[in-house]
Length: 176
Image (cartoon, rainbow, N blue to C red; front, side, top):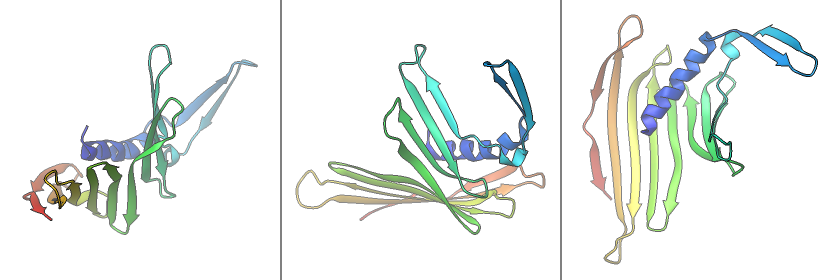
């Protein structure tokens, strides 16, 4: 799944979860009691998703961290008991949100991927600037091959807040 689609799904989930069930029921099997509590819908957050194989020998865990305002700031994943790795981070500054994947580095390849969103007063993206950097070893000898990619997209909404128009700019690639 493309990172942008994943981000929109996660950000969408962040706004949909609070409107779900507000009443939580817990059953304690030791003494057959059932507690029902009402939770503040603004404080219900998706913190993890786990996918298990039929025999539970393989577990994929996807976890989310939030800031004090309830916005996703980090997504990480791991399998079974491995050390979690960061899939992406989101940093908020005023009306901007910066989505960044960790630097990907292996022999012969270095890659970065960031998207800067400009948000309106309702926290909807009105502009998206995607920035990528990739560096490959030059197989012929002396110089690495560097590529910078930029892409801008603008979003327009109707009075009810539904997306009406997406205008994509021209993707620009420049060798470094």
